[in-house]
Length: 516
RNA sequence: GGGCCUGUAGCUCAGCUAGGUAGAGCAUCUGGCUUUUAACCAGGUGGCCAAGGGUUCGAAUCCCUUCAGGCCCGCCA
Image (cartoon, rainbow, N blue to C red; front, side, top):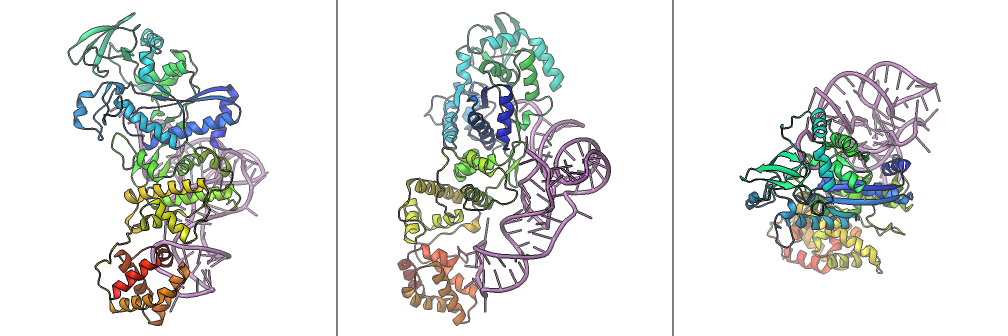
């Protein structure tokens, strides 16, 4: 059984109604770990629904969290906002209502693209609407109990006058610089590093927030959460997962949800990825270089508790090939290979939206890598494909959209993470090169031959090969001559195939020019 | 120190949430075809499944111990 089915069945054994939650702080661009969290939840959600469960998938945007620091992606002027809730900081681009919204909007866009559409809750609104008020009161009244839990489980010492409540300073608007000193229902006294001292009435909403370790269990009860994945960093002994579960049961009297721990996604050769440290590959980039169904595939085929190594180099092409193979197996075009597990379910879960009724048109992904470099836009790529008969004349709309989307992902990859040895550029004019006499001979004969050649990969390749053989010129020299003239470099994509994708007229003109 | 993950062919890994004759891709070798670049097809070579113990008729798979590597342990996926 697929892991998501196993999890769904475990949940259904307890009850049929479920709320699956995921919470992500919009403090910066989405990163790769967010992708895993959200897709893991989505997988369980889909399985629950499929099995007749009454499931709800919610995403809680932690936009009431304070800005921790000036992240690498922010201008230094954001120093002044450190400590303020993300929902009350201006948008970096000026187009959104707040800092949090800026990232939330693009985050939701990303989610939509990978086929995840949860119900969105904003922590800032929940606090301001007073939905947290009761939880805040319960927390404050159980201060000692919470302190004991945190101190015994996590082993850290809390300050003497610590309260499970972070006041938002009425003067400077910061959450992280205040020090609550005394709670006496309904007032909390506090002082702030800005010099202000005062007190807030917890019956009024939006005056402060619960610290993360308390906030998390509080919302489980408020929203009836029954399942929520969390990263391995929370899963350590004494971590938020453990304290949260205990606070949930002992303070909020709510059975803690299933807290699935998932492993991190590592970047090949670079270890785990971190938003705060500035990542080598951001989630945004990962999304732009990996077709959505392939990104889902990567997550779905791996058990959550196993780490994933993402290779943004040539490994990405292999991943896409593996996905295509899986698709062929799913549609019965390829035999299932031994050790291929749960391919049916994995394929279905990999679809952002609908499962295709018939197999989508396949074009080797590597092929697109070449074509994208010959032609600059999709219509041109399409034209080549049609001219060379690599696409049926009557291209289905779905297939075209799919191919076009893949071509775009390839283009992004080429511009960013593709290794140099797959890159080339067809030069608009004859590059400044010095040809050896042997190469000139090859090109001269080739020029004579081209007009009568059928413009097909094999014919072209054979023609070049025959010239070399006839003139006793090493094959390699013959091929480099062709690459020199067109690309200005010694290597390139497989020659026959490559030239057949270029226009015959163009090649003839270039070769003629080169031997003039 | 603690937690989790990993250790299977030369390399990258699947198989371990159904215990039942060890799998794929790449590399290599042979042939098709003296065919550059990660070319294509057919076939071959190649593994004491990290080590040791246990459960079992039977273990890569379950349990225990050990060794090695990775990640995490204020906030962070």
